[in-house]
Image 1: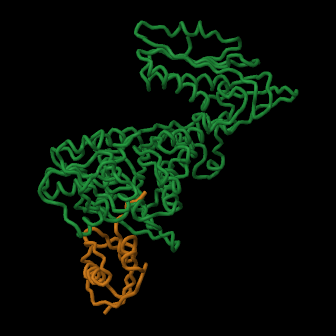
Image 2: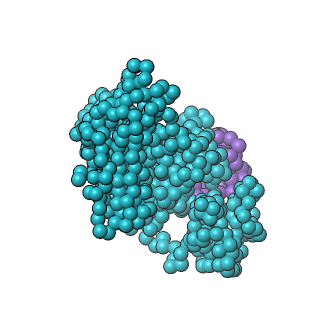
Image 3: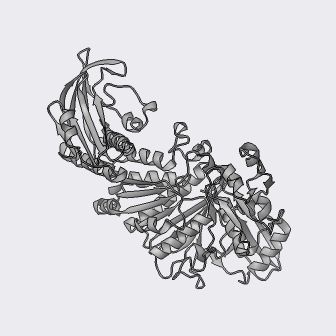
Length: 80
Length: 516
């Protein structure tokens, strides 16, 4: 189990009802982590619509997670 | 005769008029400004006009040339008095000859309005009580285009500008004092041209700061009219502007702010048929729209043109900022978002709500990025997506990289949605009914309740229910999809076409287009 810091933006934050959280997870990759959280928070947004950044860099969904990683899930926004 | 001239002797409209005669001209329109006897309650018995003639003649000639080109008239001219004038005397004359009367009236109006705004002329009033003073009339420029909002002073019609701020050249000393800017930086700004697409919450501060900074030429693209729901976050517009084209109001305000900047108003929505032509005329693009469709359209256009662009978007209390530069390693919008998000999936300002300072902050950041690009102050900047959270006052800069799978070489390739038009335009809802297509209203329930269509549209499928899978768009049949402004309907139409449904169309401009 790794301890991961997570931050949510925009519509994901609304759905989760929180801006950030720290989770203990056995998810091996960013993608697995998203699937786990999407089920818990009922995000309803497919991964393909989002981007993930790990430690302030955009990353692939297949990127392995390490303890202490800072993960940000970013939906695109369009308002103006 | 000269297109624009000053006269120290009384004007002779009959003589000026003759110079405009031309065989092709079927009409002539003129305007005369007379000296009036009252200014803000004070009786005035004569006036003196003074002009900075070299500059004023040049600017006046430019205005007349613009009018001839813009309205396609045959000939036009303007003469302004200088020196002492009594009550009732003719202070300014404008004349236009044209094939048809419509252009003649429009060009005449344009010339006098622009002369009042832009030509440096001062006015000294001599009051009946023996007092006198150079009129300090800052409100003239703001009021010049709108007689209803006008303030009352002597010969308002005749006094072209008399605005302290307009007559004095702009003073950029507070920015040229920066060692990185200096006079050479100011010259770069003056030589630059910027296209601002979208004159809403993001576009307003972008336009204001770029105009104030002295960018040489600014184009503004927006097809919307000022709506009352815009005002809380778009304070360039006021309650008196409701129903007017945004770009027309913006151009007036921006010209009043800095007459040295050439403002070009494009009253249209950026679309596949016009975006390349628009982008080609400017050095840099600032993308300020509120929908994904336009953002990706602009992305592809700047890639094709090899021009830099500054993108931003907001959602409730957050915003995202991204700069594109035409460099081999630089990511574009599609590198970050390979799958184009569908409009309606994440809320726009109407659906999700927004506080004014959020787009204002992101728009100010866009203006800053544009100035940095033009001034060359962004040399050390690497590609990134900057996320700003104004609820927690946090910013986060995420390093972005070019996606090798993204087709920068042929942007927009294979995205041709097919030979059938995506949009259909109708003049009335009745015409749309008679087209034989089934009408589908995809606005949200609250929008429908707040603003019911004039005629019954029985089929109602709110977009939010469609995108979240709570409702299904019917697979068979021929449909015309309708929303408020034609943005969401177009996005849904594109999506349905991509799913193989061929007989779906979007109502161009939405319900708003039927009403205006």
